[in-house]
Length: 249
Image (cartoon, rainbow, N blue to C red; front, side, top):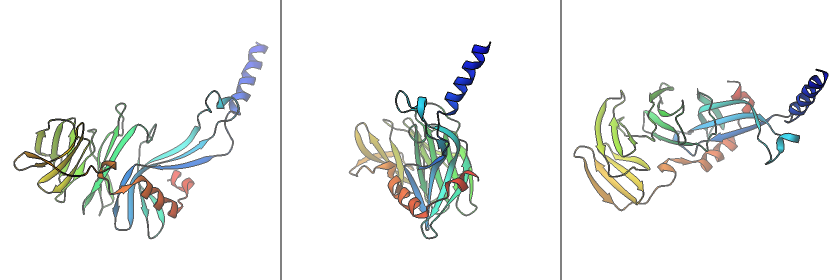
């Protein structure tokens, strides 16, 4: 019994000293975002963690131990140089490596899609942020990367099926495509550009007729989002957000 107690004490000491006492912080935004006025909107995760040390660093350097995190929709104002948490979502695991996201906007709304590419996740879905009322709601649990038109129609693809709904989720159009697209964007209120990768091509579909035409158009990187991750990081850096304060919200 004494030997077991001694071993317990030894292991407790070893594992309690496997991580640094010092806390570290990280701010990891999504791969793209949108701009409303002087504000950048994007998804991001803020983490508070401890670094491994001693036995925890073997055999491959070890993994950090997370203490706290916040994931949600953030806004950084490029004039005021301030970063705010707009809406807090559920905690997220393996961000951003396992996730695809896309954000799009019109004058009234920001639409965003979250897709866990490995398995089903509680955060999967399409979300709608009302710019004037500053409210966010889950529009659908469908795993897709949506686009929004000027007249508030939301388009998304599941496999090779293109669907267009209104704000209430009522289906307006539905078409089966020849293959699964990577992403879609609106050209006007009746026309959508569809970007494929295998093989690479861009088609446009006229919703009122269902007619598709292959067009000569460059493939836009980063799902054709308005702002890239590097641009978001640049504006975040200028705002120097207080990560501890963001974690306490």
